[in-house]
Structures are given as C-alpha cells and as structure tokens.
Length: 100
Image (cartoon, rainbow, N blue to C red; front, top):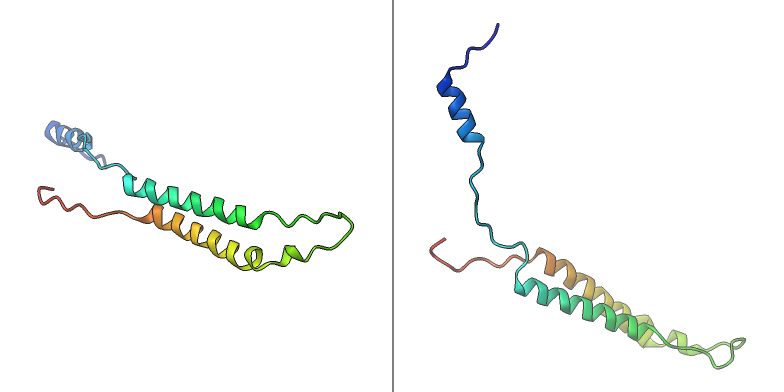
C-alpha cells in the first residue's frame, strides 16, 4: 500500500535534511604540532645514535656494532618518539572557554 505524504511533510523532510554550517575547531592545534615536532626530533636522534660503527677493515670484525648506545639507548629513544607521536595525534586539549 502506498504511503501518502503531504506537502507539509515534504517541506519538513527537506528542511531537516539541509545541514546548517557549523564552525568546528581545527583537528590539530598548536600544541599537537609541537608534540609532533618533538616526536620527529626523537626519531631522528634515535637514528643518528644508531648509525656508525664502521670497521676500518671490511674483512675484519668490529665489536663497536654491539655498543650500549646502539643496542639500548637508541631503540629506547626511538620507542619514546613513536609513543610521543601517538600521544601527539590523540591529544585533544579541553576548551576552557565558558561561552561554548
């Protein structure tokens, strides 16, 4: 059975489907970009600490590749950079403005 729709119901449906423009705050704020910059800095620092250890003789073994800096410190700094990156993306400061 066909449903009968009045002109008023059509107008209501038309008006309710029109989206009014809203002013939304930006997705990322200044603090998010600062935290992302810290993340990038930590990752670059970790890769710099990871590099090096070249042996003067290509045929010889260099124990420098097993230094504490490369095996412990650098991965910890890089992991901190990744965690900082996730935090920087997820962080959303609360609005302190009582007018909103």
